[in-house]
Amino acid sequence: MRICVFCGSSAGNQPQYLQAAVELGTALADAGIGLVYGGAQVGLMGAVADAALAAGGEVIGVIPRHLVERELAHDGLTQLIEVSSMHERKARMADLADGFIALPGGVGTFEELFEVWTWGQLGHHQKPCALYNAAGYYDKLIAFLDHALAEGFMKQPYRDMLIVAADIPSLLHQVHSYQAPKVAKWVKADER
Image 1 (tube, helix red, strand yellow):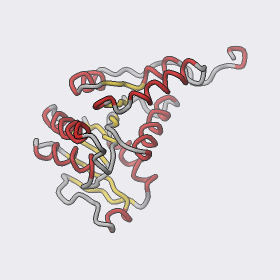
Image 2: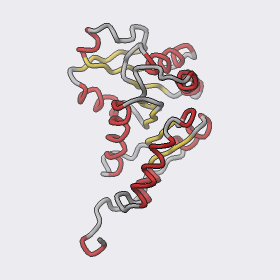
Image 3: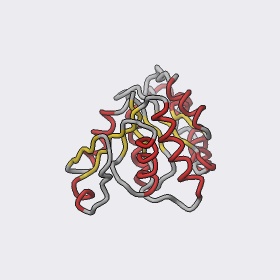
Image 4: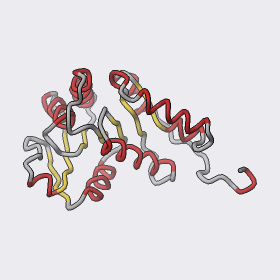
């Protein structure tokens, strides 16, 4: 099994974020779960990869060539896959992974998570998508998602598809036991 981890290329302002990345990388390796990630050596990305490697885990990085040229690529991975674009990067990471976890991060992390979550809603995959809510980083996003549900822009089964956990044992348990919902995506005209 392999999990794709989306996360920041910076470490953020709270030491708990870096600690969460290290703990997640270690926990994945200890559980025999391979790590797929964006291939960089910086920020939370580098921390989760280094921790998984230090614990004896498999780590596959996928990075666009233009970032390799800026010397951001991690040079100690099990495998580093160079691709031509960000689009190809995301598709390749998704193909390699059996599930997805987002650590704290910025717009890129949000976009990656929302894309694979959308793919799940559309039935393109049945893989778990999760937020690791380290130090409450995603509290306001979670509240906004609940607001979108309350305002009728999201169905409960699709809100429930996104796993949210604030600790690694719960996170990995929920990812491991995930069952995709069996509901139709589109609302019929007479159900509006």
